[in-house]
Image (cartoon, rainbow, N blue to C red; front, side):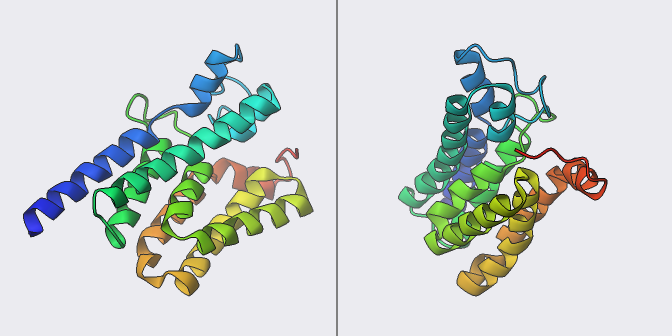
Length: 196
């Protein structure tokens, strides 16, 4: 049984990566006549940048799309019979697809919404903690990146308390998100990060 299960796991992780690679922000902006978000604003193909360069509707559609592909990746793996750590690896696959998409590995997003989408399917209590943390921090600072950075830092703690068996994989995802926010961290340290 180990062979087929391993093969299924590998296939589902690959599928998760391909789902994560879907360039939601680019597709939304193109369909709505908005400039390519990779070439405008912060250069990040995510909901926050789409809000800056486009419209609230486009930003919401981008957010829903990025959430949806994370949710779809974990749901598909669950339907295929995977569970536990294997599902977390599929979550990692989806996030890697968003960060380093197959069509252009240098122009991926920062992974916040896609990560949340995977967590909504892995553990609703974990996702609710992440949402609550982000909303509280954003309400206090009006800085999206700061809310995302601190929520990423808190995610290993939330995971340890709620689903410790997934601690290693979700900590790795959190570290990936932090690495993608390196420029934001630099701007925050120099008081140059924009507010919404």
